[in-house]
Image (cartoon, rainbow, N blue to C red):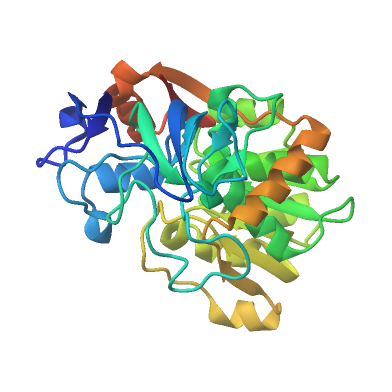
Length: 338
């Protein structure tokens, strides 16, 4: 079979498709999955380029989020049968309940374990979920990291409704999932981007108001103006170091800021006084459990919401998919199909 492997140079240009032996038959509690599609995340760029503690050994198969068909079932598996279409989870040990150190181990496509950019993978059946019938493989593959992170952040923040204002940042997968959830919940959704063309896409997707943060570096003032001085009740912050100070300024009293990304760096400076004067809650959000993913898929299925896919590349052109994601030109998810 073919699989994509990370080179010892840790350059995206050197990602290589190689021939390897097909995995042995699944053991007890496992299933073999013939992969159909994969979606890429910012984390996959960090892993593939050997960035910091995301640096794997050369030869690691990247990517955590995929969809495929069960082609073989191991002893004792009752959750799935041959022919079922399943979605992977990035943290296969986090089935339910709160995160623990033990549940955080063994993430797919990282330092600990191979990912899903291979024609076949043997996986723990308990870590997988059924894919909704109304979604294509590429669409269904977008949920495990981006979708689930947005869902987790908004579930932790509390119920959204017509009296809520949600602020999302950028046009990556997490932000657009949050936008879709917010709109379907009846909230007023505000969005920021650094590109006028992406601003137009955000408007087309339903954002009630938008701000170009490149043109308006103090964009928190615009958010306050758009909310008549109140601010955002819930903020999905993707930048960390580069955005948190503005997110704090833009937040409403008793607002919640969910930090879901680190695209702007690891060390943040912000006004602590505003945090306690406004009674803000700032939370870090790490994807979610299998049970959370099942709840999200049920919610999306009931509303037939289709995630935003920016582009689809063939497995043979996986390298180009990574480079496109790195370029930052995407709006929504970058996917690969087999």
